[in-house]
Image 1: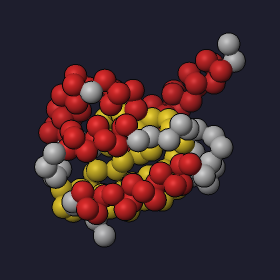
Image 2: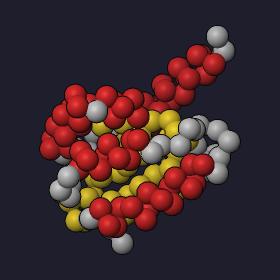
Image 3: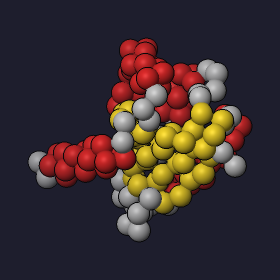
Image 4: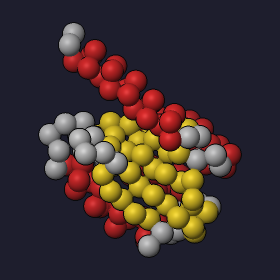
Amino acid sequence: MSVRVAWDNTAKTIVRYVFEGRWTWNEFYPAYDEAIAMEKSMPHRVHVIVDLRKGVGVPANALMHVKNISDKQPDNIGLTVLVTTSSFVHSLYQIGVKFYHKIGYYFRVVDSMDEAYTMIAESDAAYVSKSEI
């Protein structure tokens, strides 16, 4: 299968998708349903890393699908960080944020896993600070 999902850490605070080769939305949605169930099973905030580094291309209608996905996030969702060096994906993200502001709330795009983990750690620190006020 071209799209897999699993816990990224033992604390179950990050779900990681791994995309390999050319993939389709029909392959993505079963993994998405599984990830949503995983996220909802936790009483705490859960982030998502979408590892596109080994994936090839993006199927048609990506912005429509990303909007649908962002509209269906569980209450405990944190950030969804896409990891890719694809300039096409970076451009899609910039366009998506302009048209669907909610995408900018949940999604970020970075070039490396280190950047993804840093962004998640910073988000958690800000989240804790807000909850202490």
